[in-house]
Each structure stands twice: as structure tokens, then as C-alpha cells.
Image (cartoon, rainbow, N blue to C red; front, side, top):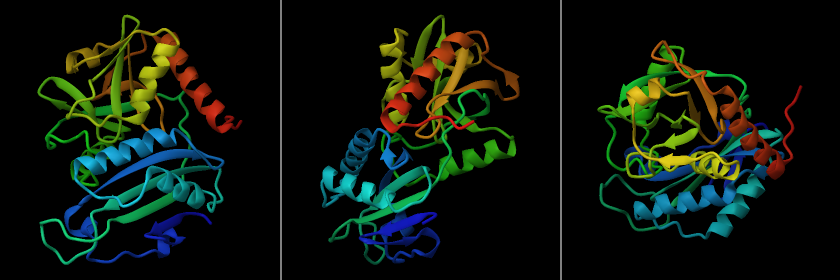
Length: 283
């Protein structure tokens, strides 16, 4: 199968799947989600993604009605049905199905899964970013399916022929539309603390761990737009990109002053992915 869809136990071709109009995802975006990269049926960092998913659901008081082990078993079972070696495994839960009413309904939650082809990022390529004021709400730590600010920011980035949009609140950099953003300065990896203003990215946390493993000092603190533009290197991380270097922000050149350190970190990230999944870069 090329791409798979799943809804509450029913699965099939992604393009043929349907859901009830009364699903609360449709009217309220009332749900949470997570996603992981998968290579040859091995879902990378699955335990961490599932833990975050359950945390997001708990923060929104969504009663999932299933265990972590049950969810992982379903995800692995569905992944095995897709023919591609490299896929994105996405899953979400909505609060349930009921006629439109703002208050919580009775009844079970709804589990959605989508699996489609995805390409593991080429970390040798650098990317372009733009910046935007962060006007989102104050629960960015919850991976809710309410993503309109990110959608608009991603469109602005597309129009600017950029990879991502970097959000900032005043002069403080928070995160990107669908990534975390970090800097390297004087040999130190600096990333915004995992508070309510950013999503605690799995790739972000893995970057912090990998930096520790290879002896790169880490600071989890706020940093400014001025620091971003003056960084030795800037990089963004997400489930499928791990840690992409940046060479341009708002049409201004950025980074390029610590290429050996950036490559050392990227090599360590890819080595871990290869150990976990057997991934080998294709010629």
C-alpha cells in the first residue's frame, strides 16, 4: 500500500478514508497528535513520541481509553502494511464524536493514523528561514491539532522560498512553525527552555542528549533575535530533519563560522538514527 489511513480500527488507502462530520476534530480542532519518522518498519524514538502524545492528551483532559503499549502495537502493525522504506507515521486523537457543543461530550475518543512516504533529510544541505512575530496562545507545549498560526507562517515561508518561519515574542526567539530552532555560539549549543512557549520537540531533546554525549556544552535558555543573527551556526530540528543548518534568515547571511562543530553534531545524530534503524544513505 502506498499510503495508509486508519480510523478507530478501520484502515485502508489514505485517499479513500472518511471520518464522521461530528468528530470534534472537524468543528473544534479538539485533539492532539504526534508523528515519527520510520525506516524499514522501525519507528524511530517511538517511546518518546508516545510519551509526549499521552502527556499532550492529559493536559487537554482527553481520556484516551487505551495504553501506550496498545498504541505502539497498532502503529507498528499499520506501518508494516505500507510499502515504502522511508515513511512518516502520524497519529492523532480527537475528544470524540457528538453533535456540536463546546462542552466535553460523553463517550470514547477517536484514534486517527496516517502513514505516507517521507524522505530522511540531507543534513549536508543548508536552509533559508524567515522570522515572524509569535502571536499564538500560551499552550505551545501541547501538541494540539489547532495549527492555524503554523499554517499561515508556513505559507509565508513558502512565499519567501524559505524552509521555515522562526517565531519570536518581542526580541525573544521561541521556535519555528513546525520545528525547534537553536544556535551554536562559542562552542555551546543553545536552545529555548522547554516551557509553555515552545513544543518540547523529540528531536530537540535528542539534540540535547547527543550534544552531551559528544562533549558539546548545552544551555537551555532564552536567546534573542540579535543572538540568532550573530550565531556561529543556526539550526532547526524536527522529526524528519534531525538538525538542519541555516545559512540565511530574512535574506541575511547567517552562520558558517563553526562548520566542523555543526557537522560533528549532525554526524552523531545520523549515526544514532542508523544504529536504531539500519539506515544507510543511498548514493
